[in-house]
Amino acid sequence: MEKDIRLFLEYLTVELGLSINTRQAYVRDLELFAKWVKKATTKVMRTDVIDYISFLKKERYAPASLARKLAALKAFFRFMTNEGYVKIDPAEGVEAGNKARMLPKVLNISEVDKLLAAPDINTEEGFRDRTMLEVLYATGMRVSELINLQLKNVNLSMKYVIAFGKGSKERIIPLGHYAVNYVEKYLNVVRPKLMKEKIKDDRLFLTVRGRAMTRQRFWQIIKEYGEKAGIKKALTPHILRHSFATHLLNNGADLRTVQELLGHADISTTQIYTHLTNSRLKAVYEKSHPRA
Image (cartoon, rainbow, N blue to C red):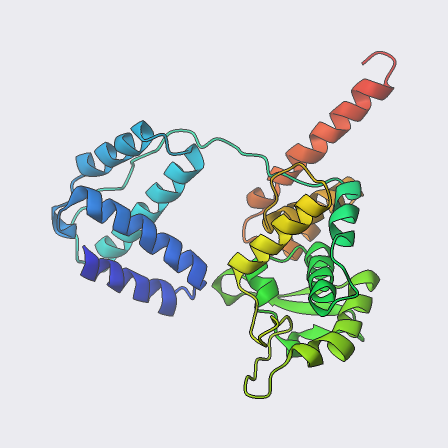
């Protein structure tokens, strides 16, 4: 299957323009199946796909992981069938069962304030980290969008940034005045000190070596600041994106606007945040209404 997976990867890159992280996720899931099934693509049967899903269930994969792995198989075999490499799609109609709806973890406003205040802004790295956290919470960007944000796509006078999401889709996101103030000082004072003469990188946020920040390093940074701030919740870079969306909805933003800001292609993806806000409303109602 290796040759066919590479062919599919080319399709994801050239035809669909998916991000590198999405493409890598597809490839990992398909390679796992190929290693398990040990058959040529044309020899894979529907029973193989069903048996594979059953195997993953026995291995106690989470429902969301099962659904993602099956989605990768469906996309792959649909492509192979449409292109004429396979006559019958073995993954068509196969279901992994109901996908559990996992509510995203979010920080409350007090926790966000503590996290943002954790970096030591008297140091160059600390000021850069504070700026990154401010921008992430102000925009709700994905971490990949944040670390790849180009200087040319930051407009401080008009207070917005241009992010490129999945499939290289472009969207304009407003930038709040707190974030604008930090970015302005970072650009004028801190970033020039992080730049190296022999390295030219047009991305906004740089490491002490003058290179772009990696996802892994930013994950480590946010975990360290979470511990420093005394936040007990398990922190991931995505938690500020979730908090951004939830806090907007809590304060009256409409779902369509939040969808556009997050860059979701389907509003059903954004609707998961309404479950969080509905839970808050129910709690307030039960606490406040005399006949709740």
